[in-house]
Image 1: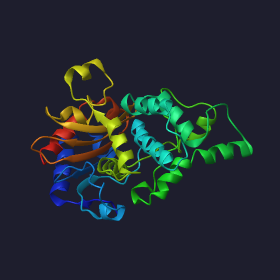
Image 2: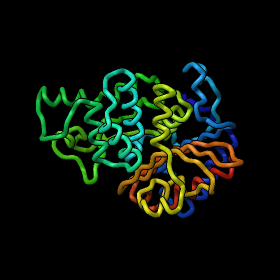
Image 3: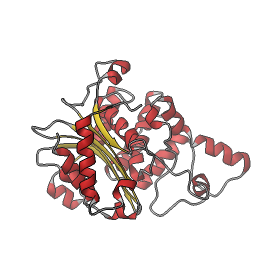
Length: 306
């Protein structure tokens, strides 16, 4: 059961919006997952003065299309790795260093794959390299499941079929990293839009790890909507994604993902004179990846109901 309650009017609006987009995109219905939450008041630090049980008992109005379907999340998985770092710090499993802070900023702010590779190595105590065999490979493989073990400890049903153990790549994995993917790449990273939405929901509210850790993560996720800043940074994670639909004066916290066969984004936004909203979207396939208009168009349609 999802952490949000299905809201009839929101569900109808979401389905109508997707059907409108599908007129020129026949691939959309089968290759896209969406989770959409709407709030009456700001979500920021909502959990700071509540117990975990009290926070998760609060009603959340939402809607979804294939929200529980696991898909390849591209760089959105970096949101999970950032949260895992904060959990490791809180448990004294890692020491917060200037290099790790720099890597986190590059992983989230610039979506750097090199920084992500370093973060995954630090989280799991592993390194890339030539293929391994026997007990050496089994031990290495077990270490790379540490983030997945932490995810299961959260007890969230949205994480049941998710997989977050792989690095992100410019071209592809080699050696023991390719081994971990499997011959048919069946062990790729997987997330659902419901899981993405719950992660960002918890971060924005101050529930994930701690209010202080959540505040630190929010700093990393904040995006500039300034036109000149976006023009100077072609990979700004706003243009071509949900944030491109936002009017002037809006605020956005997000993490986007894009590669040759995927386009994804999860964003919490606050807009003047509108209700706050959170949207998580996963799109699979080359058509989804190549189309840089469908996410902004979807966001614009959803904002009409906020």
